[in-house]
Image 1 (cartoon, rainbow, N blue to C red):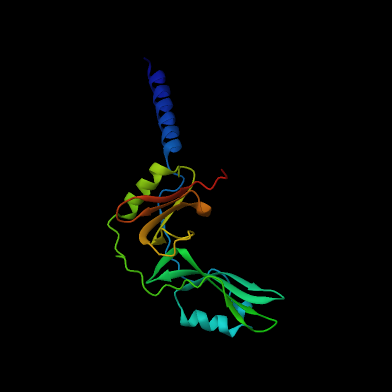
Image 2 (cartoon, rainbow, N blue to C red):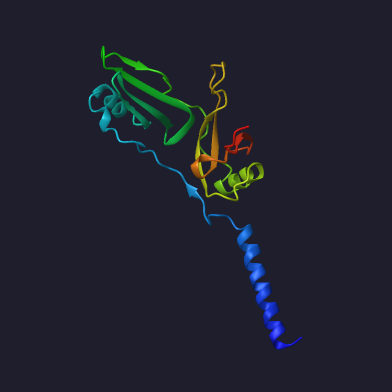
Length: 195
């Protein structure tokens, strides 16, 4: 083999190696831990409803993600946190009627006590590995968050069954896998596509 042929073969191998590595590599090189607890929207539309703003002062574990200010009412819809951990299955909503000034609540789920350990025995990288076994994350960046999940949410069973979980998700929330932070059991997995 001539020197020129050897050089061409080397270039071809390096180029092929580059494409194989690029194709199998994740879209993002690292993972993002989600820890935000700040309100997700501007609260100024609630300035005419001091009762709602007072509720946020009284319950700092609420995180407002939607505000309403229309001809009928003021309103806020909130995520709920417990000791700094997001309770993924619990929400709280409060409204003030503009016609009679009455206060209404839709989801009275402000948690006082959850009797579970808040220490994970499975680390986030192991949780991501388990999630990858259940969903394809190859075309998205991955974020993760340690939080709390009520296994009985959305059922007629009123007994709350809270577990400490890892939520592993792609950009825009999908694909998503919720798995037990101690056993690794997958409680929920969805790719975000209609079925």
